[in-house]
Structure formats: C-alpha cells, structure tokens
Length: 53
Image (cartoon, rainbow, N blue to C red; front, side, top):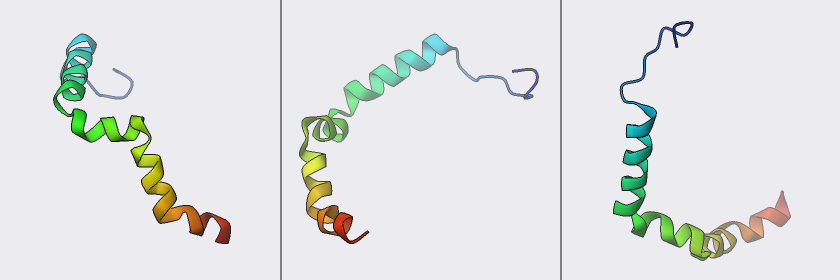
C-alpha cells in the first residue's frame, strides 16, 4: 500500500464481516440472481438480440 499511497479504511476481517452481513441483509437482491430468475429475465429481454449480433 505504500507504493500506491493508499491505506485501507478497515481491516480485511472487518470488510469480510461487513460483506457477509450485506448479503444476509439483502437476500431479496441476490437470491433471484442465483435462483435462475435473472437468467430467465436476461433471455426474455436479450435473447432475440443475441442472434442479431
């Protein structure tokens, strides 16, 4: 970090804990993505366009 002139604001452990907490608190955002619902939406909106590219 000295070479870049940058210092982290929080430790790796704190950041990891905060990230895990974010995922616990925001399941409604990420669960559709991993469930496949997101892929269905992508296919609906962009499926026809893939063939045109």
